[in-house]
Image 1 (cartoon, rainbow, N blue to C red):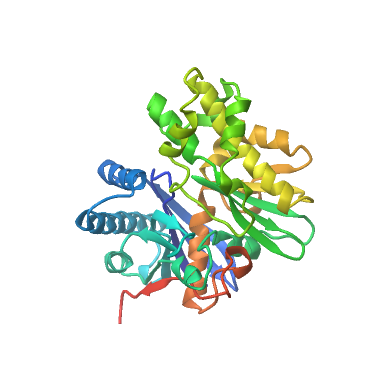
Image 2 (cartoon, rainbow, N blue to C red):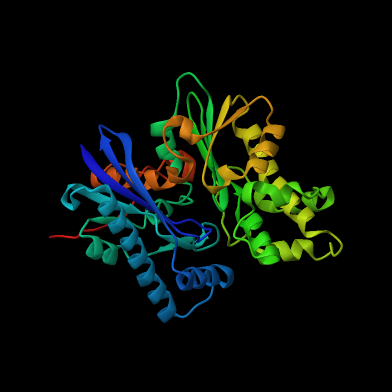
Length: 367
């Protein structure tokens, strides 16, 4: 029974999730997990890089190095807490920190940093990183990658399901009886978090309480929904390169009298409505939506989603055996397993790539 570690840090840049799993004949069992905050100075530097898209080569290299040290520290803590022999862990699958994702344009690219060589050296475990670029090399979006994992572990012969990940960006995996569809629907927590951080100095809207205190501004909501991304068909992916404070400030420029809590309510409604719109397009007969990611704790957001989709069960992925906060980290442990065993990690039907391909660069800790 092989052990793998998955490591994930999302677009919220609030910390790292690391999970230890066993994989036996493709079946996963979670043994232990650790969540760890980024050092404040590292978090600030990454957030500034995401906000401006600009830095020096020296600074970029230093952030790449510091991220790897943080990942290694989290992994080493997980191993210590778990009491397992390091030699029994086959590999680490580390997503890295996305600092830019641009699948469109003349020269499509994506960039995840956090040096895999250093991670392997500091943990003594073969580390697999850079999962997205091979898919893009074959014409894919490089995202979302988790639908392949969702298909393997969450599909049901008896129930039509959607897996909804509410990170900075929302993405859905439609697990139909005959096909798998995956796409980014648009913002999940990124705008909601930015707004409350900017106006109240709080990291996130706990339970969606601030949004609940406001009123949706239908005129503003209609304006936000005019963004061309929402009218694109799958395959499609997006990120903070589009949905950021500059985008929001531009949209709000003619709304000087709107209250801050009404903006929060409207941003939450934008998240919910864009998810529901895509579900109605790609999963008309869905019976259950299983939610993961940080947004799964936003009670108000999930209430609004149930309002838009009243005939659909909305449940946490915990019901399927994996806690909501760990699904993506577990997915990258599985992608590491796929890479070690030379099995494709993407679904080209989801990403738009020419074919299914091996994903990830292998950084070996030993000869």
